[in-house]
Structure formats: structure tokens, C-alpha cells
Image 1 (cartoon, rainbow, N blue to C red):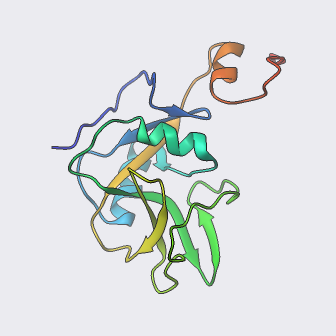
Image 2 (cartoon, rainbow, N blue to C red):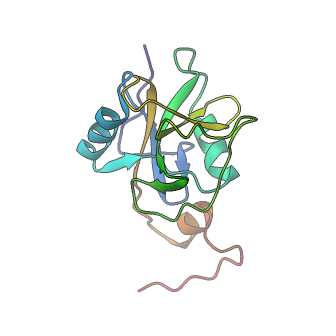
Length: 151
């Protein structure tokens, strides 16, 4: 059984200004994204090593060695399903397999590869997190000087 951490709060399971959650069962990439959208989110996008560490922080998931991300690559161009900038890569020793399009990652190493989108894998959703004050923004990784304007 995969632990699901869907809920109102997200303490350690956050990255940038998003809460991250492991889905409740293995799904195809498309089905996993539909599940995340039904929870007002998307499959996770990964933009830095801090994001990888946050996902690793979800705990020891014996049932899941790898998970779907929100990334897809076609014709050597990769995109995130949430339309955020594809500004970070973490590929393994073999380059992303160009015959498959959906990006998955390893929970243990954080390395990426691509697989057939119809293969069932664990998945990680991310949903927006409401920031209550400047300290929340700082903890989420924005600006290191702690100066924020509130509008």
C-alpha cells in the first residue's frame, strides 16, 4: 500500500510554493495527470536539487522505486505539463530514451529517464500552497534576503 499524504497541510512535503503528494496507486502517465488535476494540481515538475530532495523527503516508499513526473520529451524538446520553464535536467548515465516520451524519476537517485506513457508507475502530484506570510515565501525558496512586498 502506498502512503497518500493528501490533506490540507503540507509541512515537509513541499517544494517552492507547492505541496507534493504521492498518488494512491500506480497509473499510466495520462491517468496520473488526470488524478492530479482532479485534486487541483498537476504531475510534479522539477526545477532544482531542492525539488528532488523534497520528493525524497516523502519517505521510504518500498512499493515505488520510480515515479511519473509532469515532463514529456518529443523531438529532443522537453516540456512540463504545468507549463513552467524546463530549466533543469537530471538524466542518468544513458540519455533520455527518444523513443519514449514521458519522464519518470528514481526516488532514490533523483535521476530521470523516459518510458512508455502507458506503463503504470507511482506518481507525484503537486498542488498550490497558500502562503500566509513572508516567512512562508522565504521557506518555499523565494529570495534569500527576506525582503518581500505584500500587495
